[in-house]
Length: 165
Length: 250
Image 1 (cartoon, rainbow over the protein chains, first blue to last red):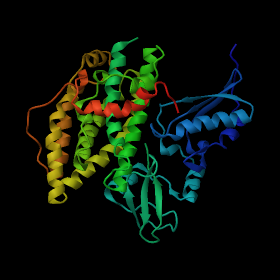
Image 2: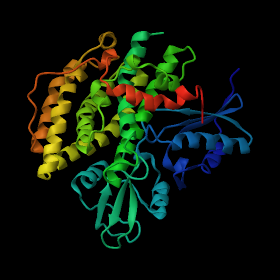
Image 3: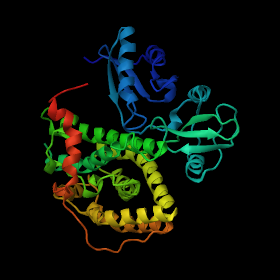
Image 4: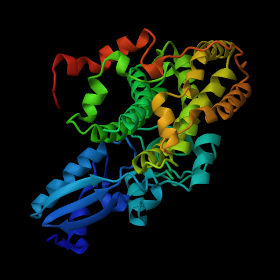
């Protein structure tokens, strides 16, 4: 007989301690990549959604989930779920604040994002001084999910987390 | 195993694999830091998409083959990518021209693949299209920048488009696997994408101040595994590690 237990209350605090290796301040729960966590026949099954197809962090996140669960006494299987595709809307408000504190501007809404990346509109706030007098340096940044920006006022270079919908 | 579906998936994935490898060659060699990062970011997206396709293909094959075997251990004739994507990074204008001519196709292809009756393919398309929209923004933007730039950048961009144009028609050729998959509502009828493609591409080229080539001579063969001389060298690089140290892992 299959025994399925939904004990997310116990599993979630464990998952909250796992973070994106590229953005250590952001837990995978706040990033919105965890779809479900269940215990089936005494094995924890975690479903995660990749942010970008080629994101090398996904393999590391899978391994980190397994080792965090192991420390808590669980054996774990991690499955990648492609559909529905991850969107930056799934980053939680707490996740957005963590990004900003870390020096990464949080994603704007889709339309504003397009205006910024394509038409050079100044809508992205500098994470250092808060000015929107900023410019895009490069549409692609240090990882697939980010673009590079610089503040025209305080001259701080910073990353902007691109909107993905 | 459903060999039509298997071949169909490889036909899609090989385009991304070979283009991803070409872009990867630019790692550390891009003309500016930003374009270098952009090229490798696009390459990374394409490889990620390839992994999803090949994992699915390996499951269909069901004979112990892995995604890596499919990527690394085929012979040249077994790669089904279009000739366009294997063309070399002659200069930045060629890299951008090749990217734009492929992205415009890729985007319209994925739009249709999202409607596939095969749920795995539609999920991969659904995921990939978001990434490919960024690629197309980047490449069309650069076509305009170079075309509308200096006399020299314009001349180089025009030359690249003229040279690469003869590889565009093949994008819209149907293979045998295509036909079966279209009938089963799994595949995309690429012949139907052609008119919109040329309209859109012409629009961008005109906006860039470039002349739309009129040549009616087109090369084909990639989809049947008959490639230009460039693919062998690319594969020698791509497969080096697996051929030299079989089954190595890291």
